[in-house]
Length: 186
Image (tube, rainbow, N blue to C red; front, top):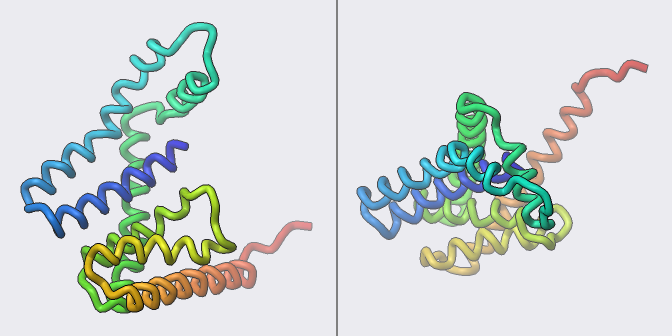
């Protein structure tokens, strides 16, 4: 769950940059980004205090889940920082590639393409999906592109092409891992 929270935090930071560069000025975006960057540290530094406040007998279901979440937090600041930085780096590389690809397919700028890419990635948290995300991934991209003024037909075509590229790379990578993977001892 902590990794999912780091994923969501990283996506939020990048979405904040894209929205901020599109609709706010640079100083406002930097200020909001600074506050957003502070959130993991705030949660980490208040973890023991929250656990002490929630401690004791008679945990309800939600309270018990919150206690488990807090107990699973990174043990020290170095682990927190290293985990968050690797998560952010991973998302930066992935989103940079898909943003570039979407910007080419949709003939748009980087900020709207980044929002479209994030929209597609956020569909992974939906409770219902098509097989391999077909339909929901594209809908997330299109939903984020339309407010940027991208034509709906262009947005749908670009979203489908990005998803086909993603699925193709996944299949090729999976095939290569099977072909060149470690032999099983047997």
